[in-house]
Length: 238
Image (cartoon, rainbow, N blue to C red; front, top):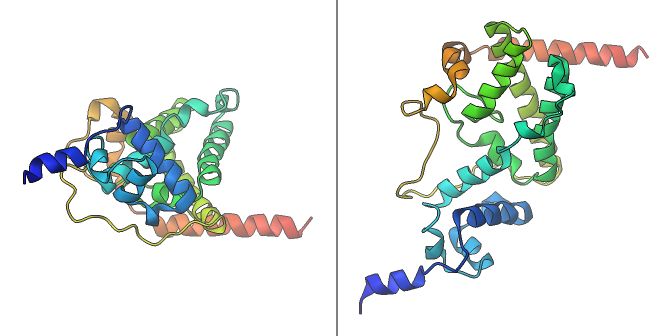
């Protein structure tokens, strides 16, 4: 028996099957069942194909999960309120609300955005892609922020969004236990390495790489806690 021919036959692609369709179907599957239950076999069954057919478009589950996150974040900046973005305060407002909209519309998927590998180890989820961070930093600098102020704001906003929206996702039914990663997925593209980054596309990020790599977590926690206490004090005084 020709096992190679049999394998090729079982992995025959369904007409119209594409990487875009596979990724969007995975997003829909996680929206319904959660990331923990996503397997290549389960996704294939939902598309009425054998799991082998999916490997023509994605290299495995790791690649699929990364692609789902990229799909969610794609175009986020295009949806920002242009009028609000004319001030830095308005920009932060519309940016934060766009990220929250992802968490609200896809609560079972958002933990992936919050916990998967960022594009480089010195970036923070949920603002985890180079292009997204580049746009964020550039917008603040264009509004007159110094480099250090822009990086500080990036840290504060990242921490706020991560904590608040991850909690909100959990309230809406999300699971945050780690997603099992297959041992061998061939050519799966796993981020969190900066050796092969396209530096020309993100000049601001690369210029501020050293600052972005610094650890100010203790100070940021204290600042956030003080701001929270101030907010509570204002509330009870009303």
